[in-house]
Image 1 (tube, helix red, strand yellow):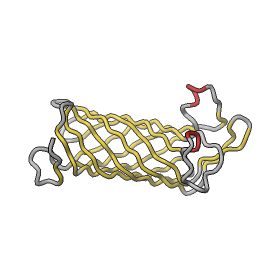
Image 2 (cartoon, helix red, strand yellow):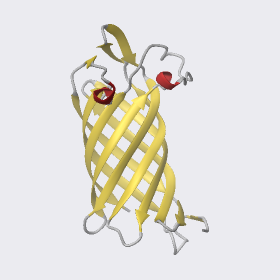
Image 3 (cartoon, rainbow, N blue to C red):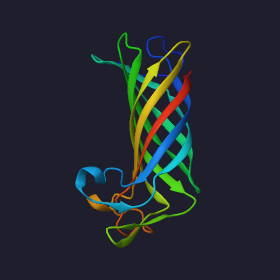
Image 4 (cartoon, rainbow, N blue to C red):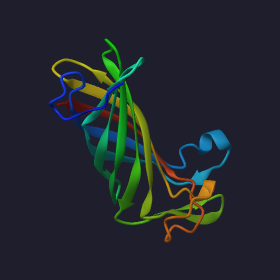
Amino acid sequence: MPLHAGAESSEVPTQAHLELRGSYTQICGTCVFTGENPVSSPKVGVQLYGDYLPFGWETGLGTLRLGPYGSLSSIGEIQKIAGGLALALRPREASWEVFTQTGVRYTTDEMRYSFQGRPASQGQEAFNLAIGVRFYLENQWYISLVGEHDSNGRKIGITIFPKNGGYNPGVDSLMVGFGKSF
């Protein structure tokens, strides 16, 4: 399984994606599964996403690619910027691929809300995690379905964001995108 970088590799060429996504965002969207009930209104938003995947491996499952990603989002009155590492796996001969991203994000303001009768907030800094699938159409165009979760990690004991000391169940988004692969 050799590692290949850059366009000089004929086996696993560099790949990049540019995509526009529409989102449906809810404070603690996963609370449906835990029985918790946050008091917040869902928000509709838009996201511009891009990644650059210069490293690739041929595996028994297909082509695995790795590289940086970045996104700009507008969710209601809040703007968000995120970045980190993206990982994509495209099975051999498939017209689809699964991908995940993990990184950090920063918003222009805290997202304040009431959670189980007590004040809570999603601070300006948080982890950004997502998983999705791209369905390729023709000429490298694709549609995607993505689930994204932003959280300060406090619920599992992570405390690296100093301003995010309060309880934080996270912010969850479901997105549909349309993009082009290069």
